[in-house]
Length: 228
Image (cartoon, rainbow, N blue to C red; front, side):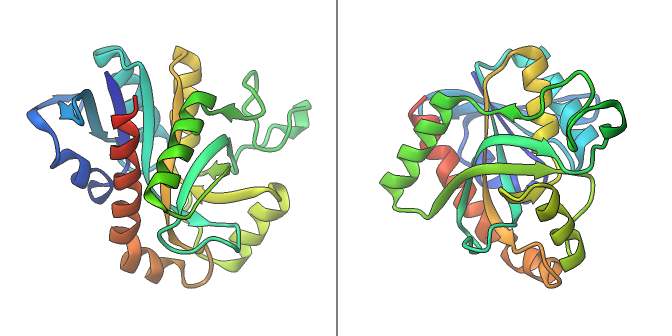
């Protein structure tokens, strides 16, 4: 079983509509869609936006469906200036950009008693990288950071880049999903696409290009599923 998590309806609808033998169940107000995609058993959920919603949905998915791997799909804001709308983002590490326990000796972004970063599955990273090469998509592997704010100003962007100079993208769920997978020992990878450039025009760009990002990320996830 392969678990796929997206925060918004637009981020999961494309994949959900491709399921055969579709079945829907709800647990604690979270909807799960099971079926067959590329001859593989999958379960797709729309977690809702933000870290708590993501952690709850991931926990329910793991407990109910026992997935072998989890893929987080959807959109993200680019922090790397070489990225453009529609480019595919593949996580190697994920971190929180809004966690601060430095007073107790932890690194900025680190939750106490948790790793500095949550590492994606290397085999999954390799498979996604092969998939985007085959599809001739523009993609980048790197650090994705998460927090409970939409990054829509130059000031917010600069603050994150100062704290995490090598961060390539920012969004609102991936690290919570990764932390939950870490706790349950489930391999994960984040496969998203750029919807905006996390700057003063991010809100308009996000609304205009969310569909393009959803198509890019869903296309990549579908191809990845066929390789698992």
